[in-house]
Length: 64
Picture 1: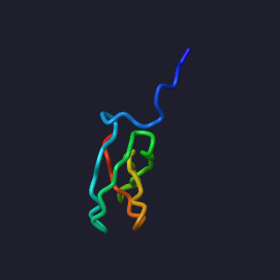
Picture 2 (picture 1 turned 45 degrees about the vertical axis):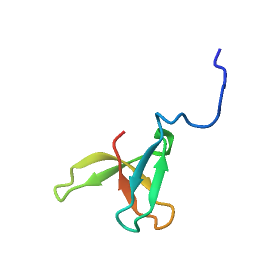
Picture 3 (picture 1 turned 60 degrees about the vertical axis):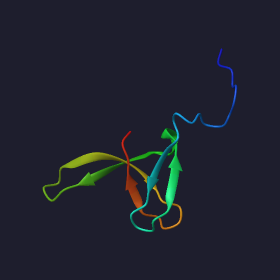
Picture 4 (picture 1 turned 90 degrees about the horizontal axis):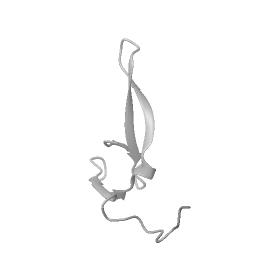
């Protein structure tokens, strides 16, 4: 049985990134990461992982 000890994310999973569009420093946890496709000119695509910057809406690529 799973027991919730604390609902605050453990510091080991919290990561930081700086938005290159607006300069905001963002904290995120793995649950915040979204997945999308990035297409190239031949029609092929790569799976990308990103978070959205709340102040400016810019997509910031992160590692999963």
